[in-house]
Length: 292
Image (cartoon, rainbow, N blue to C red; front, side, top):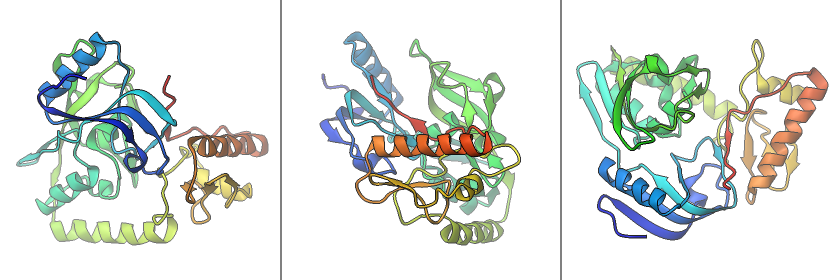
């Protein structure tokens, strides 16, 4: 690939440390974007040369395939956070934990729930990430995006369709560059106490010491996926290196050498079992990436 200002390129790169399942996956190119201009020039080059590309956030809600004969694009360089009174604007490469802690330290409230979300702002906006009955679109005002025609555009959140853990941003062919939120005046000490209590609860109930990608399935209306999976006797069920967590049944963990297929096959086994036992179709919350 040619040299482009505002990016860095590596070839034949392992993605094992770029996904939270720690699956061994490889890509022909890894491109780290340092500026919006660099992203635009990169996409022009890739499209002109018919090279495949995929934009990867923190790899925290995805199941990667084994090999990608194209370019993985990371927007880590878009990592600024600007605060003006109650308005917070940040780049899509900012980690949600950093955004949450920065706002709390500035006595703003509204994003405490996001302190332990292991994803980027861009990825979280794409999937309307959430926790503790809150979601990212609650405080979102607008998004700066890159369109299919490589034009930078500011869009209000009302221009998107969004629901529980879903938006139509990718369907529209848009790339999230920046997000702007409106928060409320808060109290740092009170926010930190909320965060502390929630973390202690997570530590007891979730397998934080093992590689995973968070909750595997959406909760069915009026029920919990974890309860259904546990009641079906699937806790501890294993295929290869992938295991239904003994700590929380709605987590699949990598016990050491799980492959993409191990995880996908275990997901299918759980879905088939729950459908057969309870006639409930569990909807996947994670995204299976199958590069063609």
